[in-house]
Length: 127
Image (cartoon, rainbow, N blue to C red; front, side, top):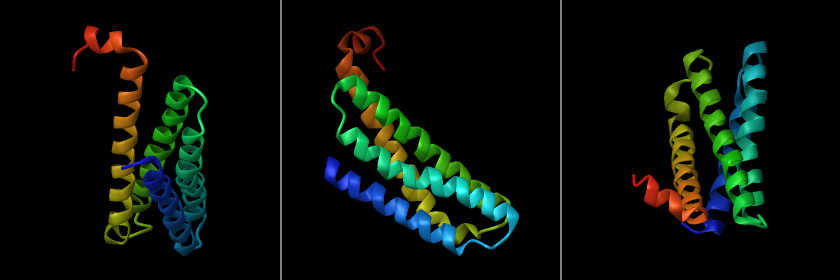
């Protein structure tokens, strides 16, 4: 997957998050969780755009770390919606799967970038 495709994929993830939050029940709990999810879920794509504009490898790695954190946080809030019985698991399972796939791609990219940034670490810690 190239950068343009991942940029589009993370944007679509954010759009799906927006639609989910708009459809949540109008309760205090759903409102709090929804706001947190909206912030982190839309941040994934916004921060990935920043990754694509990084001016150095160190900046790229740092910004990719932010994408990883926001994506993981989004998955957490999706889990909270399900486990607090605000949303049926079947309604958001595909969205959760997409979040997990994006997270896996970002983690793998981050590992690759760190190894390329410090090739000696790969020799010292071959895993």
